[in-house]
Length: 360
Image (cartoon, rainbow, N blue to C red; front, side, top):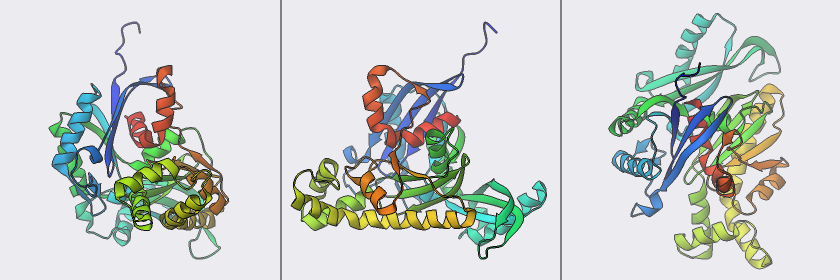
C-alpha cells in the first residue's frame, strides 16, 4: 500500500526506586528507531537521599512520581500516548509451580487454585497472570524422578499497585497498553534472539533483581533488598565519611582503586559485604534452576545503575567462575551515530524501559 498508516510510536516507562526512565521508539520492520529518551532522578528533586519513588513495602510516592514523570515527558518532548509500564519485581509475587499434564482450560483453573499456596495475601487483592515455561517430562522438585507435566511461572501483583500506575498514567493522558513485570522487559531488550540459559542481574539503587532466561523465556525471577544504596552506605560507615562522598568514591574507584593497593584493599573490604550478599543469592537461584532442569547457566548479564561499577564484573566472575557481560540493550535500535558513546554508557540503566517500549 502506498498510503498505508504510518507505524505508531510507543513509549516505555520504567519507574525505579530512585529514578524514572522513558524511551520512545518507532517500529521499522524488524528493528526500532529511537525517537527520544530521558531520565530523571530523585536525588536532584527530593530533600532526603532516603526518599524513593518506590520502596519494598509496596508504596509509591504517587504525587511525586506523577510530577517527576510529567517533567521528564515534557523535557524529552515525548509525543507517544500509548505506553507500556514496567512493574518492579519487589512489587509483585513471582513463583514457579509444577502441574501434572492436563487440558488448557483445566490448567487455568488449577493454576488459580494452586496460587493460594504461593501468594501471601488474599487473591481478591491481586491480579494474577501466568505463563507456561516448560511442558513434557518435568523433573520432580524433591526427587530425581520425572513426570509428564507443565512448569508455570505465576505472577501476582497487588491491585493497589496496579491502580496507582493506572491513576498516574491517566492523570498524564497516557494510554496503558500493558503493565509488565520488569523481568520480561529485560529479557526482551537483552536476549531477544538469545536462547541460551542466562542470569540477568539488575542492580538498582535500593533493590536487586535476579532473572533467569532460557530458551527465550523468563524461567525464574527474584528480588533482594540489597543494592547500590547499601554499597554506598557500607563505604560511608567503613570509611567514616558522608554518604555523598561515599557515592563519589564508589563511582570513581569501585572495587579497584588503581595503583593504591592499600586503598584498593580497603574499598574491597567494605564493598564486598553487600556484593557477596548479592552473589550468594545469585548462586542459590542458579543452583536451584540447574538442579531442576539439568541445564547449566552459561553467562551472567549485569544491568542497572551499578552494573558498570569498576571491578564489579571481574569480582563476580572470579567468585562465581561464570562469564559476565555488561548489558547492551540498543542492539536492535537505530539511532544517530553521534549518540553511540552516550547510549552505550547509559545502556544498563535503560534496558527495562527499552524492553517495555519494544512490547508496545
